[in-house]
Structures are given as structure tokens and as C-alpha cells.
Length: 124
Image 1 (tube, rainbow, N blue to C red):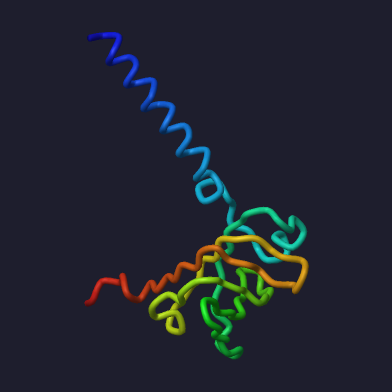
Image 2: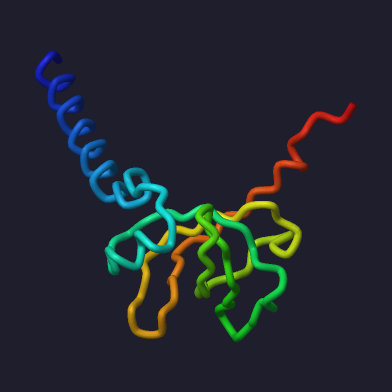
């Protein structure tokens, strides 16, 4: 019985290590500005920025592009292959996870998350 418990524990630990290893891009990717993403092209990073509302969002089948401004004030076009998040045009902040692509001078985001702090503020 004790040997079975130890074996189950070791298998569970192996699965946990594998899960952390495969999810490490999302977990361990640092928040960086666009300039740093450009200098380390191809590296998976997270960028926090604001939607540049003066530039229209472009929609094509299965993808959309927009311009974002990072915390340093640098703007860059962002491509996301997937659906546009709800309330995208009304968001205060956008978190983009992906890689900078030198061909096309664009940030290719695997994930686009919207943050709308006013939604979570307490009503007084």
C-alpha cells in the first residue's frame, strides 16, 4: 500500500513539473515595453498598453489588427489571430502576449486580454 502511494505521488509530481514546463511561456514571460520586444525579437513577452483610439481597428476573417501604445509611449501595430475580446474598443488597458516579428514590423499576439478598471470599482 505504501509503495502504491509513493508511486502515485511521483507520477503526480511528474505531471505537475510537465505542466509548469509547458506553461512557462505564459507564467514566466516578463512585462516589457515595445522597444525591448523589438530588440529581443522572437522572445515570448507580455506588454501592457492602451488602445490607440485614433487609429481604427482593422478586421479580417479570423484576425484583427490594432495599434497599441505601451507604458513608455511607443506605439506599434498588433496582430491577433482570433476573436476580438468583448468591449475591446472601451477598454482602459490591453495586455498582449506574443512575439515581435521583424518582417512587417508588427507584434503578433497569441493572447489579447482587456482590462477595464471602471468595471471593478465599487459603486458609491
